[in-house]
Structure formats: structure tokens, C-alpha cells
Length: 153
Image (cartoon, rainbow, N blue to C red; front, side):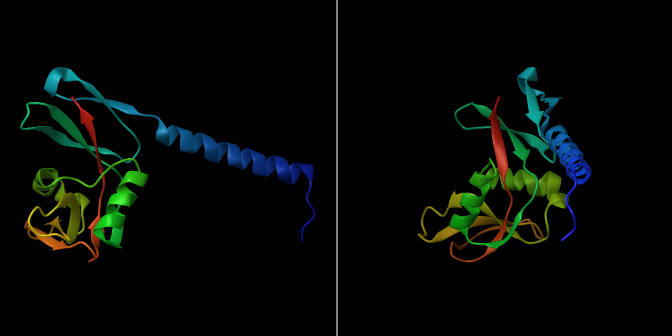
């Protein structure tokens, strides 16, 4: 084992300090203006503003696509994973928007939605980014997952 010196410790300390600064810079939000009500929305490193949806009750929310995805995961674990990274799986409507305008952000495979099939216990909806089809799939099966976060506007 090499000899530990004060100089080597200070060098490592400086290196870690630079890594901390780089990480903190990544986490600084950047602001974008959303057309609906001209509300500013903060995006963090790797996030992408997807669009806004007006809900049936008249409320609206912006959709932010979070960075990263998860491969070959069942539906329950996909929901847990999305929550751990600060988001949730997209709804079917959000997935249709993602396919229509941002399919280049996805592999040409099926991705879980957050919606369980209403009439078929044990099934949830998914979006195929190769064809644009939405279909239900057995929740214990393994698909890809991508998370979004929603901001009320």
C-alpha cells in the first residue's frame, strides 16, 4: 500500500470538491416560460419540457420528462422506480403526446404507463414507441419504463 501523505489527501480533497461543484451545477434549475398563463417552470439537468395538458376538470399541468429509463421491469417495480427518482409513469394521454412529438427520446419498444386496465385485473396499459400503438400487458411482464413529473399550471 502506498504511503499516505498530507499532499495526497489535499489532492483528493480538491478533486472531491470539484466533483461536488459539478454536481451542484447540474442540480441548479433553469427556468422556461410556458405559454399557458405565462407560468415559469423550473427544469433540472437532463429534464425536458414535453408540453401541457388540460384535464377534463379544466385544470392543467405541464409534463416534464425525467432523464434516464429502466429496462425490463414489471409494472409495480416500474411505478416504484419512477417514484424513487421523483416522478411517476406517464398516463396514456401523456404517452400519446410523447410518441407524437418526442419519440426520439425512446427506444422503439413498449413502455409502461401508470394506468392499470379498468376491466382486466393484472394488466396495465403500455405505449409502443415503434408503432404508436397502445395496448394492455400483463403487469408481471417486463417492459421499459420512463418517468415524468407534472407541474400544475
